[in-house]
Length: 462
Ligand SMILES: [Cu+2]
Image (tube, rainbow, N blue to C red):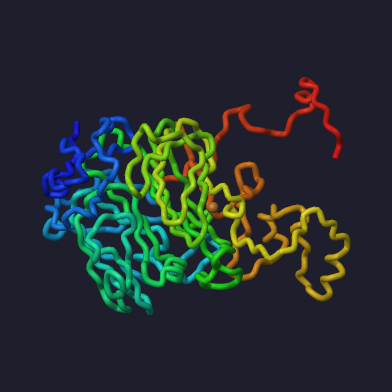
């Protein structure tokens, strides 16, 4: 069995140095990742825990971990991991902060700010114990800084502009460097004029794999999903970072449904979903259909197996990561989405009067001489995915929600919505397998007269 990196190894000091902290085990890294193989013996851990940030910062680094050899890379739908090179036993990354012409969907683009040409979907991936050196080049017209959210590091590497470092001024390149003393799901984001810069897109996930993973750490699919929210008013070309409440574009890795790439899995796969939320205001209860999951870790640490419980919805608050694990044991196209109903809409404005149930009569005819394109809407709700066909939208606008589904009807969801596509057989994980071919008799179709008669169901005509 793999031995885990001991804290003694990691910290380069004896356990006795933790006087007062006391009970760190010296026989191994006791953080089990969501499984049962690393149980903590009763009393093996003190009630008051130290963090690694309190340990020495001159830890002897371990060799850089390599993809395929030391870790299985995460899957970043609609995005990708930042490339690196190894120089003098350190892993070197180059983060470029720049304006990006970003497509939220085929119909909606905006001038956002991003890291290395991507918005919300550039992931830094590393391995516990290695030395990392991250150069950050600022190509924005304003100063910035980068905070490494949840990571244990020397205070001067923490990236709070003006507090722990001078600003990274336009055209300048800063060097961040430290040794990773933990593993888990973390994030990075601007920590200078956060409201503007994070609202413009300067956020990303930071994944650290364990050095000597327990067998149960291995999964078939390991997804990295960053949640955010934007205000892009219809017809405008820039996000409005001043918005505090009325967000109209809600994204996973910078995309709205139906542009969110599906999470493709095989039946029986072990699947990890790493969720982060660096939106401005909103917490998102993320809900899966047809399955349950366990929350196995936060950005603090792994949750011991004994403290995990099954869920179908997990709240991911602003500034949190939540790591979920499940077995995708049911074939189908399963929804995975935020359960706040306003968060599965696209470019919804909330300034409308409530029209539900209103009978407009000949209002349209009366108003059209004054406003030629006028059309009363909202009286039957907001099921208006196909509205673009009857009413022109302003330029650079997407429909409030929707994509045509397998039955020809609109899927009346947008925003924070994606699909977990589970199949018995796949050509490959990188291909969208299309719509799920339901076995005969397993779809909720219109009931036949014979079925209604058989079961004595009487239906009054509308
Ligand atoms: Cu939400």
